[in-house]
Length: 278
Image 1: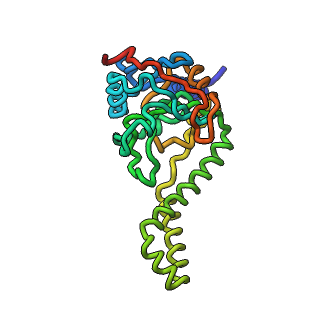
Image 2: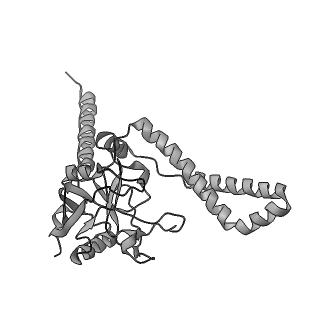
Image 3: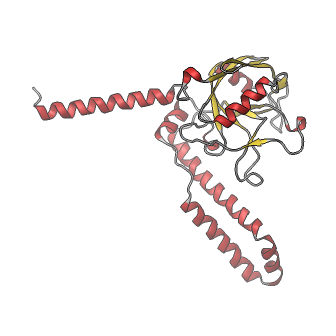
């Protein structure tokens, strides 16, 4: 027979276990916080149908996608970029648009939205010319991805940290390009000293603003269903696939050339809103 203290401890343990289970179910179940009012979109492709749900907490991207669907901007277009085990990308290809593509402000919410398999996200130009990470108003992708062990995620995080430090260093060198050029010609020692100073500045900046560590939920999700974790915090995720993920995965297996262009076209026949504003 348990004494009252043991019963209290047992009860607390049961409650904690229930809370953990509920949280895991919540995170692993497609959701955006208000499902009854969310917008669902049907993407009819030459390989089958995909249905995506748009998140309400990324309203700029949601409304932009809805406007494009209503304008039939995505109809009769191919998936113009396929990266095996990562993403299938569609929308307006670069050759279809003007030199300067329209953009919308980033709405990067990570967590709760990250690049698990089935995530719908906006493409964008790289940080070097787009430091605010503004999204393309025309191009989007669906994550196909692959699974990652916890050890692989930890290794990936280290590599990403080093890559971002190098990118920041290169950006600083670009800012001081004129001064570096002058020193390189006249004073090699001072030139090397300035390079070292910029490297230290880049490293100190990264220490103060390190990349967000993968949460337990992210690690569990990437181990269970997979995704593209290296994209987390870099691009705006504004929806997710709720039906037809096998179709997206089949498209993701399409053979591609060296430029990640499909060797055979996979077309989007039509995109329509099936639940939400008409």
